[in-house]
Length: 340
Image (cartoon, rainbow, N blue to C red):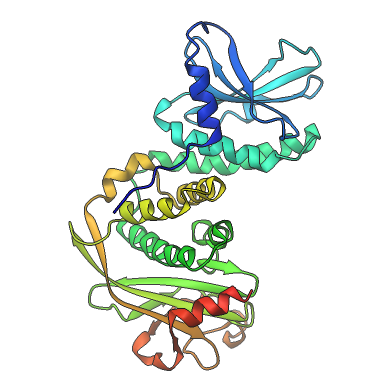
């Protein structure tokens, strides 16, 4: 496979330019991120360690309590006066552990995208704190030892479908945005009036799938629900690995930096981090069977209307060999979801 070279994120390019300045020994060396961004956002290095950081300039009268913010293990938040403008103060977000440069770059680009058009300090800080709270949970996952084997299979299945979706749609950002699996949504892919639930099975019970709630296949909530089932054969050293399919998707997105950054964030939300990549080099996946079902009419399922009062948290299984009548092909699926 010919590998494409992914474009660097804009913020990485700025940091690398700043790092070439040999005369920089103390204080902050910085450059404005973009004149097109409404807030004052500076990409910076802090000496003498030359720590990568990002700075949001706000009114000096705004009271910021950083003790409530510093809950990250490898990131520090500081507030300092702006040397060039006494009416401004800087909220600095610094990376302490250079091992996490890629994640920090994605975090910073994400924060910028959230506040891109905000020029009110109160709204700006609220948005930043809200987003940082989400990133805190992502950084907590860094201490774990990677995804479980079940989670790896689930992620592989969702990415297998996502890769096909990207190959059948010109709107890459929309495709990535519909991927809701990392957010533990009811269905793995959702948009407008359709949803797709991806199920992976392996081993002896490869035609038996488990449904996690009475809402997952309920078309009274979303009118068009599809079940995308992959029966996997899992072998060490054979087939596509999780790392390989992720690289495949990055190659598809290589010319679209916004979609690339969005995909990186989704992977981290799922719990996939580059520092754990070695955990995913061995297991390979091959597809034994691939079937798509249109969940409609008498498709075997349990829905909310069928649940007696007082009953909740319903989980059940479906034997797919009993669902042949609801099979559709890939062309029909992508035609259906492209209509919306």
